[in-house]
Length: 62
Ligand SMILES: [Zn+2]
Image (cartoon, rainbow, N blue to C red; front, side):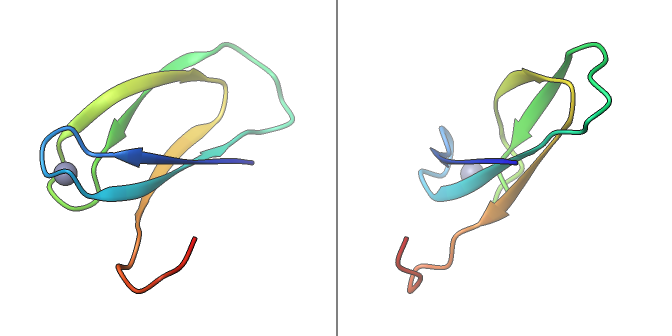
């Protein structure tokens, strides 16, 4: 599992991008990164797993 921070190109808020990879290998697919706040597309990554995004609470220290 891979976690990255991204800033939305539309609303400018930070969110987490979590890549959940499986052990199956398989073909890499294009998975869109969708802002959890405004649902804007923030590009895509190639992964053989799944990509999910999570809002970062303002008071959370990361
Ligand atoms: Zn956004």
